[in-house]
Length: 66
Image 1 (cartoon, rainbow, N blue to C red):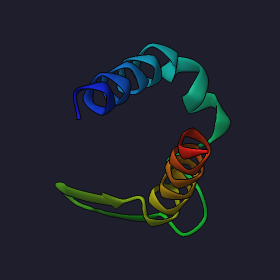
Image 2 (spheres, rainbow, N blue to C red):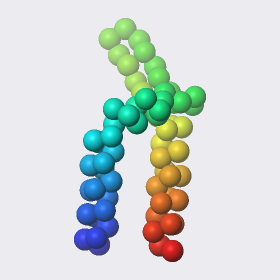
Image 3 (cartoon, rainbow, N blue to C red):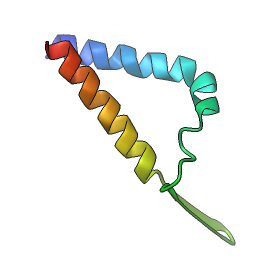
Image 4 (tube, one colour):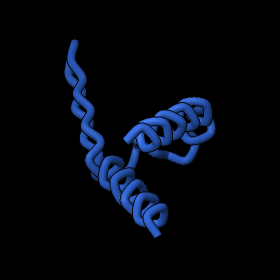
């Protein structure tokens, strides 16, 4: 369990450090992400981005188990 927490922490740290370059890839603005803007209110729900992130994490976990 400790190894997994450390690994997840390192991954989150790397994503944070690399975010300026990752944001240029277009993540967070994919078709299927919901954005509602009204006067004095905005709501953003990244459905497609969440699905892609889930698939990537699942593949990485699958690869680490082998």
